Image 1: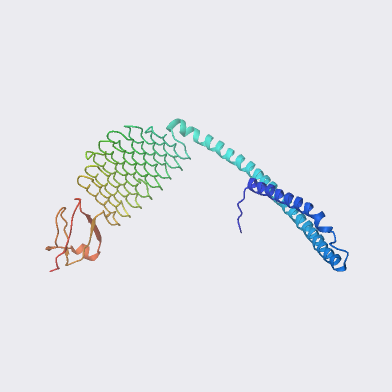
Image 2 (image 1 turned 135 degrees about the vertical axis):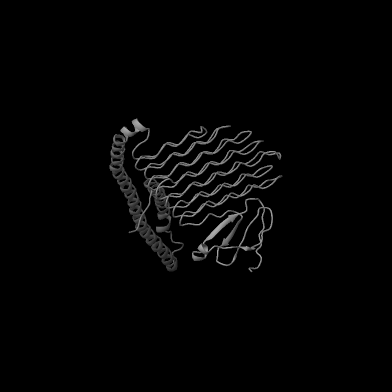
Length: 382
């Protein structure tokens, strides 16, 4: 089925414009009718009479065709006007029952939610309220049965961002609010927890900007505490102040996964006028899911770059999370295991062999260079 989107006001305006064009054409045709349909004969000879008659015939034929065209034009304008009226009537007719249905739905939810709202401060069905901007207000909890947690409000000057609200049985946690700016940036709010059955943890809020001091730390990602869901992403560290003295804020860690889900990614470290902030660690998997990716370290303009965060632990049936930069190693029986030392090169040790358990079930494990810089080379297997 084809769909049509229209605006009755636009259609009505087009009809009015076309009516004006038709009126202008009608006026022009009427002005040209008299001098073109009754020509004076140039002379008394037969040729002049025939030429005048020929042009008069052309003019009369033009006037007849113009009358037909203007009649069609008028019909088209009437059709546009009628269409605009019909579309407007349809919108009015559809809006009335929808508004009534929404009113009934809201009234039912108000009655259903009233007891738990009074006793527990949260509804049975519905999303939690969002925190107001520049207040650092926490987001409200979501409904006990259905509903997402509210988002935390951003922080004002020297004020931390609000935490995201937790979900109930089914729903996602709210996002943490951004930390407020200041001489030293304030912390971002933590993400809210996901639902007990389904739902992801909310992302952590970014750290606030430091005007001359350090950037604020990012908020931690919310945990997915239920059966299905992934942890929230950690918040990014705040930007450090200018002048070579402010460090970037450390990022928030990713949230822990539910039984079936992945750990949240760690946030990126903040950019520093001096040193960069540390990257956030990835969240852990619990049962069937991978650990979260570790966050990248922040850039240091006049100092050192921040260390990257470690990848999260994998679940019982899952892999550990990588990090940036990361070194991937595959454990295979009889082959050396690569060991990485931060700040140095690493070579394979012949004595360090993969276990027989790893040989039966090869598993890829991620190690991250916990230092800012690391190179790794593997020696030939022996």
